[in-house]
Length: 357
Image 1 (spheres, helix red, strand yellow):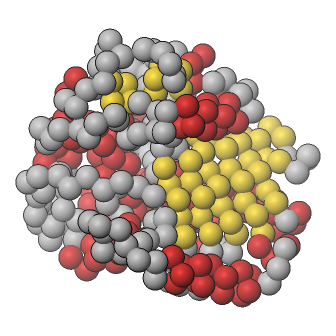
Image 2: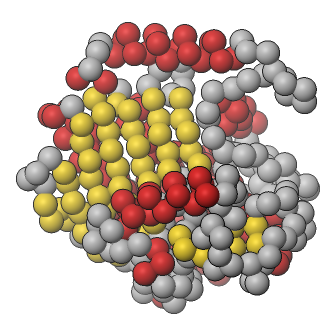
Image 3: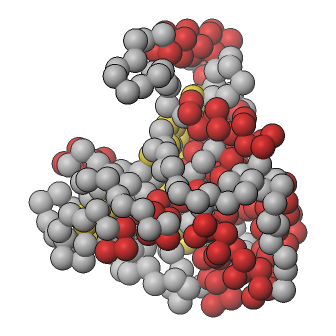
């Protein structure tokens, strides 16, 4: 479940379709085939609609700069290197992460249809955006979905150290339900997503306590001084992050984050490694029964008495879905740092970024 930052001075709402069209045009202009460009744009806008601006269209500039620098491949040949042992293994050919991830999650679903459970990994790819998107693709197809990744550039402090050991190691689970939207847990293993820290810095917004550290490993509330992320829950978040870093990195053969070295965009690509798992619910019980159980769980949780300062107890992902539904009709309000970034990108590419709904 993603924490919501309420940024000051959000811009005017912009129609999501217009932003998606801009992202598609920008990617196509640097050589991404139009169908792939549309798909990547769709994944970014999906995150923005759910209020996850750290993993939305703000990433577009990074992706384009990596393509321009030659560290990301706009026309990759993503290929399987092994799919004979109940697992699909892909070589990503320096693809944008969404292109590698699309191949991985689809292969995992195909295997789950055949065997009940499917797993897939993708090496040598890029940042895949919000982990939730990939788990949700599976949930919307009737599977339980799981996604995780690792990247170059250690950013999360090791518990008990002043230096980092892992990336922020995202992970997401999604479960089909009878409600319009699946139940989805999407989280980083650090106390905050690094993208949210950068957005807070752009908005001159202080950070909560115990989420970030400066270059000396000392806790800081100043987003501009934040060099590292503190592990969520101390040793528990550190341990969870490290284990998922290993499964995404070492199992793909790319290596754990600490072994990949620094991430210095755009001159060095993110060196992403991805891992997916899908479970065919029908292999265990009729999916209609499972959906009913999920809906009962959601209803029961929503009826729990809220603590002081809360209006309702939510299931993971529920607040994001409520915002998603609203923003489909009202448009997306972006933090000012995101708009400034995209305006600059539009100027560089000779495009026009939409400014109002």
